[in-house]
Image (cartoon, rainbow over all chains, first blue to last red; front, side, top):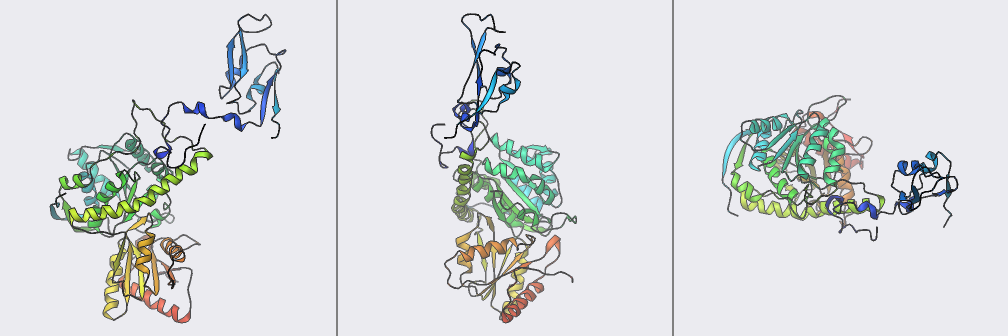
Length: 105
Length: 396
């Protein structure tokens, strides 16, 4: 969210008048730990991507197939939205994702 | 606007209120019957059934659903009416905050009744006092004419662009709701010209999709509540303006605070609702005995008429506030409001506020008892006693 509205600027009843504006809300600011993937263990099965409750695990198509991998995709995190819930790490069948505490600022 | 014509009819107050809803041409009525409000919604159901009122009548399974359906109807742009009482109002509780928070101009008549337990169907102000902080405009009517007039006024205030808030008209269960009174019934054209249906609330519209009632994260919630509070406070001026316009068209002048022989009174009684008429009789009797007693009545409870009330009470030496509800272990709700209001005022001489609670669950509180109350307070003053509050008319 770029600028928070003052009470006079809020639409009546705090109604949301712009569809889909949740994409502007940086839920990543809530995070106390972030996921780190060990790419040597990752088999690109996509379980983390399927379980991520906040669409923070993003799926990309590989240009060249990887014979080690389960699928032709690879995965990255969108840290703008990742709240650090740890579900991806918990669900990963290969134990490839670990949660690392955010450093104090 | 030209002056309204009217017909003088003898009518039960509940029926008069449902006739007011018909004159206002409401679009949706969603209600659940509960004593002593039942006659209002029964008569509305009859009128819809008979084709006298072109409205959608939604017979819901509970008051929680009644208010929820009203919220939905108002979001769709309908002029919405409901009525309830006591346990029904209690069951609506959470949705009442939603109606005001989402800023829907719903109008509801509450036939005030006590709350269980012990179970009671009779009248007092316990139900509305438990819902004091819901963010609605709240009026208290004294008699049938006022109940009808305030229903019309409530729609004009609620739908005003500067307000857009729900409003409650409180009437005393039985002692107002079930009484047959002579009432001036105005003509519909005048009512609709005075209070045309306006839609300044957010609307459900497929061409302009919005999300209503979303999460108010901590960064938004305070701003949303501030906006609601300012709208409620600013409705004060709109209410006064509407009272003025109403007087021009319908010939009856209302005010947020009504004074009765209080200007030169040493002791001023403060009341709300129908019992004020009994208190007026008591004032008349005491005046005959040359006792300088007066009455001040609150017609508007929310937004609280701070300035008008301070002005009305500025010359009083002693105040007697009579509440028909009790905040257990606290005080009479009207009394505590007035104490706070006076404490924060610039009055040099702040009168002591004697808080009395009585007439609970429809128990009579007569003009003679009001006179006894005044004598009691005179005794307290001589002895220098100022109780926090006292329940009166109760057996030892």
